[in-house]
Length: 412
Image (cartoon, rainbow, N blue to C red; front, side, top):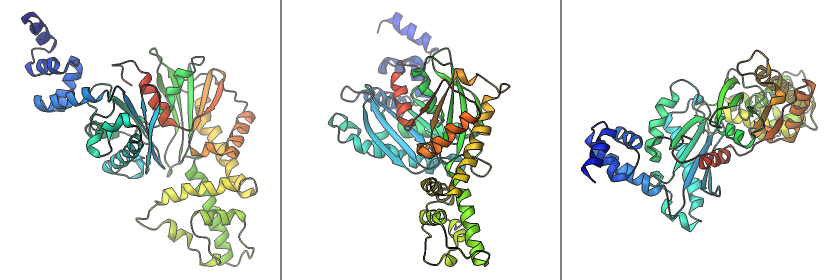
């Protein structure tokens, strides 16, 4: 390097010799090297090792890889794709909702497990043999990653979790790791719908939440309003937990009335479905202690997971059970009239008319045809007509494709 070039580089690095050496050695940008040096606590050798690893692994046998993880209240789903959008690995693990009392380490463990499970599939692709599973292999395997977690909007979570994930996945350069709410993954669909300037994402999974996004100047999505998502203790009507809870309460009432001699009728199809889902169906219903089973301490699956799973029983008998249909009508009504309805009020922050707004539905509850039919019927009753209504089953894939479509150096 000529003296003039060296002087120029030192000027760019504000006369920091360590930073200048890191830039000269790796060929990375000053900003990126400054970030690497700071994350290495100013130790040049450590920063050099991380930067070199990142650079070498941006391409593995001529291919680049992006990781996206959708961490919700019932499961964690990971997808790995290459630069062509080809899926090369999928993985799953346990729930990742930070508001459910899980420690940061438990959440990170589930994220790593889902990623390693996806990487197990990568072994079938000989061109990615360099990314064999194992904790160490997470370092530098991905050009970029997007992790969307339920509960991430709560105060302090992002600041605590982000540096831990950067270290775990070896993603230290600016823009290489995005950490957001899981709903934000679906907002990436806006790039595929240029005809609308606003979209509402409505989730009915374990819980429920609605968020409105506007298209920003760069073509991305900016969240402007949120409704619901209060958690299973305070609300989340329309989601699996609320549906399952109502089903269990009706079943408990039926069992109690039998024990008290108020009712002598046998259990119906609805109650049988609930008890079967919970593993409590026995010949003598009077022997069932459902409350004790659900509230037992330190059990797996958790009480929340068991209650949410009971929604499957409610949905499975909906066509034949008045009780099930009553629950679903009530939950759909609340989801449309309140959770979604608040974002459609003309005085709501970021309001755009429904005719100019797209609606994206996601979450396991929306995968049931009966629930979707009731939902669309309720929209019709309320005379709400969106520009389009689209259901998305794979938020992780949506996020991964969005990552690979970003120009180099642009924060995902």
